[in-house]
Length: 160
Image (cartoon, rainbow, N blue to C red):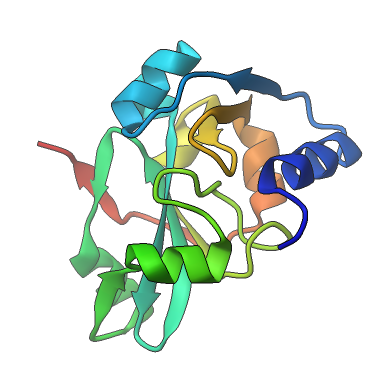
């Protein structure tokens, strides 16, 4: 991945004629910090989780104010084992650090993409764009069209 993710996202979104807003901000380590830095509600944030489902890695995107329901994912994908990619795997597979993964599979990241059913309920999505200091916000219809998920299904629950 020689071209930085942020640059690839800019070029791709521009080439697809998507109106998006880019926000450069201080480094953020949590979804809450990212939402504040962007001036957006927490629920608008798209949290992208790289997980190993059975023998393969996949990307799961859910609203930042919710948590993943691993049982729902295991049932839907008919896998016995499900776990988060660890920091080393994430770096090796994506070149990214936790919290910087954008919510896209191909052509940005080489993983199957699953979107939680709560994501399309928002009118836009905000996400860190390959770094902890850069975010992109774009209209939800454009996100869903471009993301081309394998499936949209319910796999999140309210965070405590």
